[in-house]
Image (tube, rainbow, N blue to C red; front, side, top):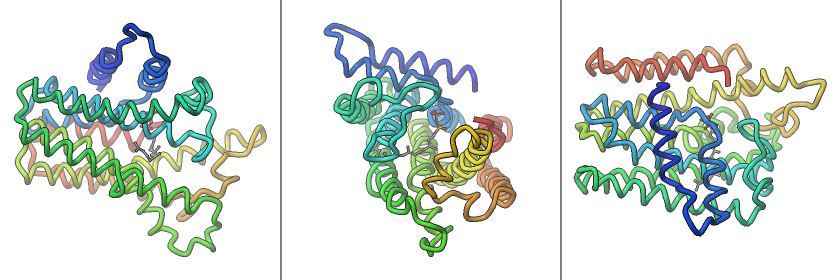
Length: 294
Ligand code: GRG
């Protein structure tokens, strides 16, 4: 995983060179794209490609595209009209450093670059029909069947008390299947498509990734509670104040942890049938997500 993350960082660095003319927008793209991050989505994409028999290098443009979409979504999520966050990954957010106009354009440019990057997979010998299928998966994960729908639902439920939000758990699952799991799912599915996986292999990986996508968010919510209680006394945690719908709020911290473990078990079940030696990076990735501390 460490070596995969290093290769991804190098490829991302090369994807947005600071060439002449040095545009502010390119600096802003690099600022978010290269400001740390665990690189979970690209790792998932590369590992899925290898699992179905493809080469890591063939999936690298697709892996970068996944991270570019992720970076775009983070910039937008942090804007004053959305979550209004000033810090991410221990640094000032994009709009704080570059201003709102550049931040919005940066998010746009990252989406365009992601599509361009994915399309360049053909120059590495990936058949055009696989690339087209991958582009469709990506578009589905970003738009009204994915991130955008999840974000709308999330913002609509903000500030509601649990009593006001009757849909509770159902609403929460809708948000995170769209807002978080959709891109993780697309990353794995795109990797498997690029690697030449069969329809059955692609669908098994889709189900695995959906489980770990949801698990990712349950763990995120539990970590937020931990962070909030550590910070309490200095400033109350944002989620507690804004009354954001989270798994610990709906089912409590202990039940949330158990749910994450259940999703990890389910994710593993979907991998049965793959070569047991080749599947270990996927299992490690799931364990990493469930046990992560940041
Ligand atoms: C059109 C791209 C696009 C987006 C519009 C703004 C928006 C709709 C969606 C927001 C989606 C969002 C920010 C979801 C949160 C997902 C999440 C769990 C982020 C944290 O991911 P990590 O932990 O972050 O992988 P790092 O920093 O490690 O990369």
